[in-house]
Length: 181
View 1 (cartoon, rainbow, N blue to C red):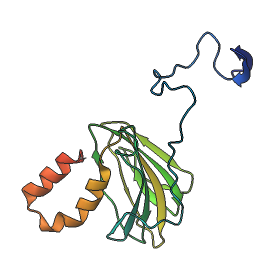
View 2: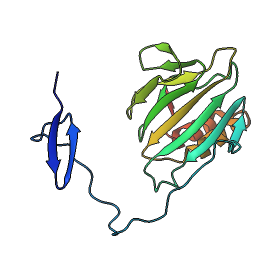
View 3: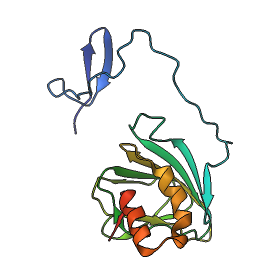
View 4: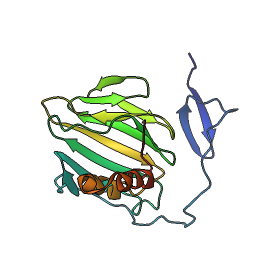
């Protein structure tokens, strides 16, 4: 077991599990101002969902536009037996799932498993995955996409699948980086 060591970094002292010879690296600075700025965004818990279809409510906590493409973070509230997508993968982004409440079936590329509050699934680009609510109870989760992509367009387009031809559906899924296996 690695022991924590006290180290000095400029005038700050702290504990780290990283050895001084192997410090973690940060990306280059993206903000180069001197004093910081008031640019944070707060979304209150009571705000209505941004989109609702088929017993699923989507709250766009941080989308591609609001994060400059860094990430997209969405709260997804699934009604009882709301289902969800079967196994698929994305070419351009990773996806993470964090279960907030209820039971959500998560596919990790090998098998389906029950996910409960606090369970987390990370899927790198190209990783096969899926999720669904099969239970008689509602469930909620956070979905994180990195880098950010216009997933709200995808979520809102799902309710129009029945109006599309097979070719239009294929174009819709391909154009939204969803490849079913």
